[in-house]
Length: 216
Ligand code: AP5
Ligand code: MG
Image 1 (cartoon, rainbow, N blue to C red):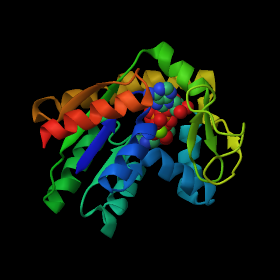
Image 2 (image 1 turned 90 degrees about the vertical axis):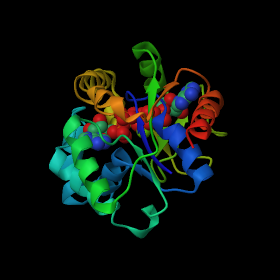
Image 3 (image 1 turned 60 degrees about the horizontal axis):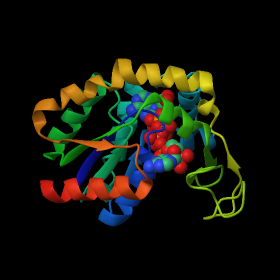
């Protein structure tokens, strides 16, 4: 299964991705997570990426596409993968097409999450992430068993630096300007699955599973 997940920041892509990759036993490729790990590991690319992320802007395409190219050359993607947050503009979608062509691979679905800006802002403002393992929580919708502590690894839960209100508004603007047009890019492919992201985590997952089941 080769899946792309698209949708505005904070709509729940990462949350649903974690459930799906477990079910399909495929790697979760989140460019955002890769950039955060590169920064955490004190790499040059991580530092460059963070300077864009903190402003709510897209990391330049040459860096992003190269990271994806390298990720797709690993062995574990042979039986499928799930992209979360890539491609994020038309140039990235074209670059991905080339990478897939080289490997003679085709996509199975482009899942497009939809929700209102109000809901997105509420979700992002309540989001907490584990500093150590990156697990994602929400203070009301998905609280950890102990406040401020990760259920999975005991790490400290923090707010992402790019989750400040002003940066979120910028990320949303960039989403509408640059990322939403990518839906148009895939319009004729028959791969787009529109999902109502405003439902509960479980209901959203059930909807995705139903549509994927009907497509295959
Ligand atoms: P990235 O990490 O991809 O961030 P994003 O796309 O802005 O999306 P988020 O991770 O903020 O939201 P999400 O949809 O995953 O929601 P989540 O599941 O956490 O990218 C960060 C930055 O990296 C970008 O701004 C850019 O600078 C750079 N970058 C990344 N990819 C790039 C690319 N391809 N090109 C260039 N630059 C790139 O959920 C949010 C909250 O809601 C959580 O608290 C969760 O618990 C809660 N929640 C989730 N689902 C539900 C539900 N159904 N009901 C109730 N609560 C829910
Ligand atoms: Mg995410």
